Length: 266
Image 1 (tube, rainbow, N blue to C red):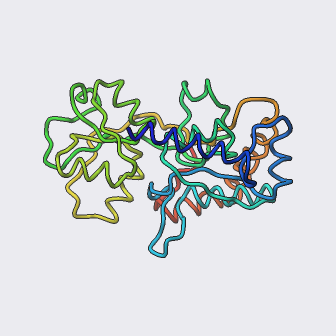
Image 2: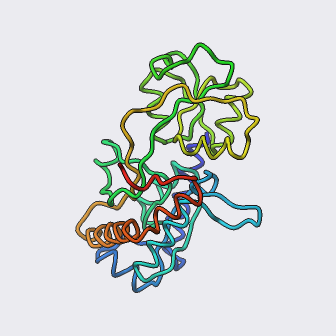
């Protein structure tokens, strides 16, 4: 039901763009030039996935991805306008032209690469298998067959859990996934290791632990719509990411929100 509602909302947003200004567009023409003429780049993100994108105590949208998007927009000479929604609905709206880009801890995968182009990666993460502290039955990814996990609908973590034979219960926020593990509604969750460490910094009493980690890092990047009209946007954002890495901006943002630098694959 949640997925159906997300698709309906995204479709309604796309229809409204025919009547209201301020939406991205899939019409013919260079996408980068369209963005520069508009003076803003429309960025989609969840807004509920700390420390990547969330609202602080004052209600302001903050987070690693939020600041990275703002820094990229500044490099492009435009402002970043943020639109929030459920993870799976972000891609629906993106494909329909409601948003220019998605900046929301999007990992490059084979299936996504078949649908979208990607910028240069701006972060590198490992997937953690998280269980309750007293769980001695799940010790590795191979133990997930026949188990239940909690993850975001449409996420790489949900897809990975399903591939490993788990039944996935979908929820919209990281805190909810971990709460479901804590109270026994789910046996495990797969998530970025840094998201888990941030949660534990905020909730040191939480009875949770990591029992397995992927060896290879996943590449986090920005999906770009395929087509010649988006090639210059991809090149410009990738150039901005390289410059932000070289001048230390990415590292500073990462250390601010994650306590360490995850912007270099060393």
